[in-house]
Length: 101
Image (cartoon, helix red, strand yellow):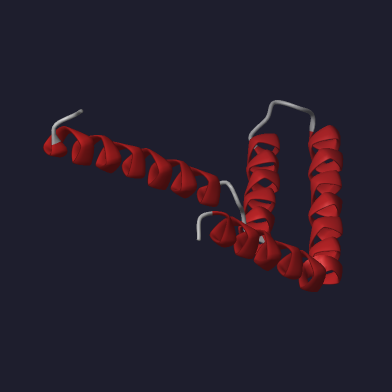
């Protein structure tokens, strides 16, 4: 039979692995607000890059206007779906917590 200290050490290592995996899984659950902010940031970066591009001014303006329209659509979608998205997010967190309880 294994020494008590070795057995305890194995249990501690197993618990650490389990907690680490639980933490990684939890971090993968992104809130609707975090997702929205990352999408807004991506569109803003796209507009910044387009503004600095070498395209002729008409093309650049058209592209920036298109990005602005995408941002407007994103804002409207976020406003329309945030309540449901938040409910789904909270349910996902509850399931995640209950998996390890």
